[in-house]
Image (cartoon, rainbow, N blue to C red; front, top):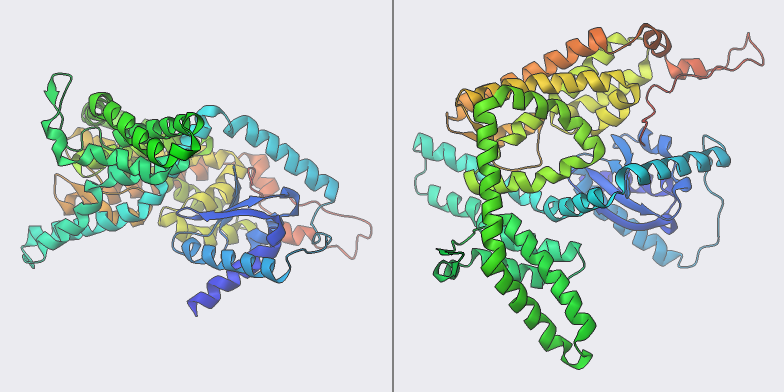
Length: 508
């Protein structure tokens, strides 16, 4: 039955994105179905947003449909299968007119071109493109990080309570195996993302975790297995890509299969052992030291800044730079102290959305959007509320950030008081982060502090939005139902009403 539901969702999405002929690629991340398009104008945004399974749409380097965790991983293969089936059934389809649009073709083309140019100007800088590629390296690792993190938490509970002692070593092995070799996976994905041979990237990165490196001296000291961690693996694999590409240009084809992989692994391996491992190790140590110092000495202020600025960082695409930092902290201490603080941004967003719901009692359309998006918001999936509610309205986005700052300050304060804790994996947020919490003060205290931070984020986000999130003009314009406004009035022939597009995402 579940398969039928997922296939039905895929079947509903396919014609609304222009059909199989308009699709160039299909992929997914934790929450979003990412589709490459030939012609953006063929997409029916409003019809897509109206589908029950769709939480929102986002336009970036690909067209992204927010389906939520779990659902997206099931709908994606169904969509791929449908596209393949329809292409096989009609390999050379005749050109057909596009489905009706709610706006004219000229208006849609102008809107699409404006969005395209705005996106290019804001999100296609070399730095942001590089960050996006770095994120693409780590995002596929998140399911394993989550699974191993939860198992590690379960193992900690069994250890603390003395339950099932015979099972503890087995769970420790299961939880730790992936993390002990995460450098290999990072190297594999790095080479894949930057156009090299993935297995060569993994082979070079594997040098970092090989126990025999302890016999090697570099910069006057013995190397340690794992020194440099994911940062060293990323740098080593990136170097391997450039060495491989250089070899492909200069090595004769007859010798390529023997010479290119040998030189790639040899040159990149030597540079890794006698340079990158040491440098990346120092960088990793500096990251851990700085994060610990920052929260220990100025935790409340640091939490306020991090929690308040995280939503704008997401809007700018700069949050992707934090992924290697999170992973480095997890490697070093077993958890990242930054993620619970950053998760407070989602709490502020939820509080703001609830305030919007109560401030606009007559806007049935927007209230339905909020009701459908709130469950995902509580679980840390913020895109539906961001793109469907706060960001288009403007001021509620700012007050949501205020709520995030308050929650972040609350968590940071306890770090400053010596109660440090974090998440054993990246990806989840909101209530979904509870199973991944770990810290020095015990699970009960850790859960209580995190829950308190969420409560503060919800409350401050709600109050800031309720009292400061709307101007008088906004309340007059938005506190009506757009669907009622669009209904023709029989008594006023020839008169039309243009509703306020309260739920139209500014960036979709």
